[in-house]
Image 1 (spheres, one colour):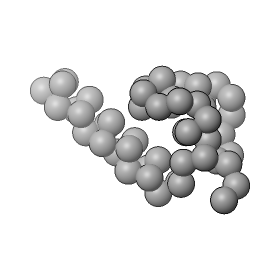
Image 2: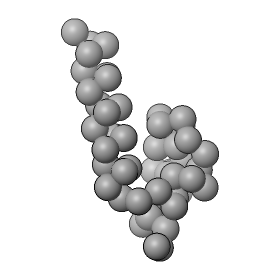
Image 3: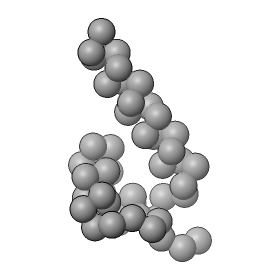
Amino acid sequence: MKPLQLSADTAVKLAKELNVPLEQLMHMPQHILVKKLMELEASKDKKDE
């Protein structure tokens, strides 16, 4: 599996937001990354309410 096609800035920000190491993020399957981003967004929405 090839690494995700992300810019360096985006990768660093995502790793920080998701609390995962940068290397793990870059080799994460795309469908898992999308799932984690959806969970992160849902948790932020709950905090705003």
